[in-house]
Image (cartoon, rainbow, N blue to C red; front, side):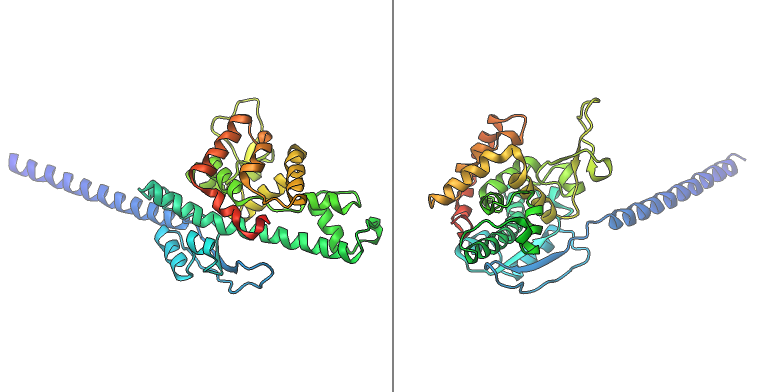
Length: 316
């Protein structure tokens, strides 16, 4: 009787174990599918880095989500920091997001390298768009022999640009103060600080590189350490280019950066190259830390030799 009892007990244990194993396998399968479905769909486009040249190629790729896949694309199109600086590659690879496994890259230097390679083309590309707007305004102004016509006589595209850059008067000089590039070194350094070199939750969940605020709940991510009486969110974006474009517009239009734009204008008028080190001093309003924040940006620029990016013709 005891052997029969032991047999049934062991049988029950076996059946329970099989049932639990089946549940575990089902859970893992469901989890794995869920994880795959949430995998970031990273698209990319190939652009020409020459000013006013047309796009060489536009290519959409579904479900590229791994760092090694991105590295292969950089290799295929021969883009690197060195090729960018030496003008050896005309290809700018514009990725929509950082890879899903970015945090799994063990080497800090490799993570920083991928972060820079991803952000550099985006910052450069957005600056090119601004330069195109600036050139269009200057060409029209020169054809008008430097006169400031009433807005009633402006072409529709110029009126649209003035609205885009939030300028309401007819003085084209005031508009041009806002339609100008952001030094690459400064944009890269701020991106590194605000996103923790690409490791922040806001960047992973909403492509929020520059820590911009919004008060619209459905358009932002709630900060974990936000005080109970505060209502702001970290603004989220559909891709990295949109996030960078928003940051550029903030610097170029918000009244908090009037001094920044005034100094940039002076540098332009005196024929001095635009540089992040010169202009970052006017960004105290970007952070509650004010002067300490400016020092941090300066340190990032200098310690990573980001000044080299300001030697491009964008700064001239």
